[in-house]
Image (cartoon, rainbow, N blue to C red; front, side, top):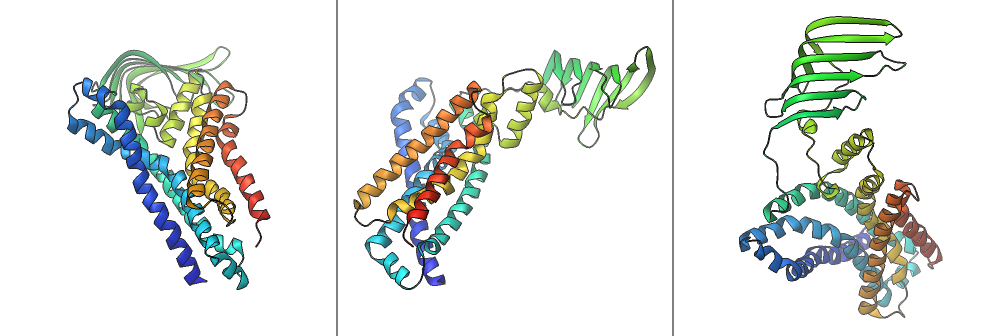
Length: 356
């Protein structure tokens, strides 16, 4: 079985790697055809355009992975079916499910790799937008006269923030009372940020409100506010698009928008899809394997055609899920994971019907 496992794995990976490296260049050619005149009209040099596609290549690879996985599965199982290798294996007591084991294992590992690649994409996307002049990165290190709601519910009014020096000036902090803690009103001349200790307020006054007419007031030279965990960079509030953020960064951004009363439904769908889309590689391989077991079907052309068609439908369902989840018709997690759930159930059904 080890020899057979290696043979199947080698056939699968050879096709998968060839497509994973080849399909992105087709995407590059298509994008150049559509957008090269627009880029050159902006005054961009050919070198800058070429560098933008270097940064865009990981995104093209990410888009190619589901297609490569399905085509590799269809070709591997289809060729073994036409050459009677599956029939020979079954005659030797090896079931179709056992033959699928190395492909499913590889698909699982590749899906994990796709998740890691998805976390790299925000970095390369930002670099690409910078090269193309579509994203102007702010070099300002100051922000003045703004209000910010912290994660613990406190409201901050800040006269001046210097993110380069990790300090702010003219701070007012308002915190409402809860059952677990008293309310508070704090004013401070300035504050310094330390990654280990957080913000230290200096030279100010604080009133602690215990409810009713009970309160306590005192002057301080320095005091730390444990609940204020936002970094100077987060207080700068430089907005980003979802594709420019990783999963954890997007989670923090969603929390910030939610505290401000904004609509976060679409962002919650897109955050969940950062995991659901890479894992679609495993699901689509599971779905595609049973489709390749009939030798009466139309060979390589049929395999390519059905692979592209199924992948396009799959990705279209993710777009539809985003629209439905953004409207609030269904829960964002359901909208993000419904395509995977649908194809997973269909794949299990098709596997059960395969003669083993």
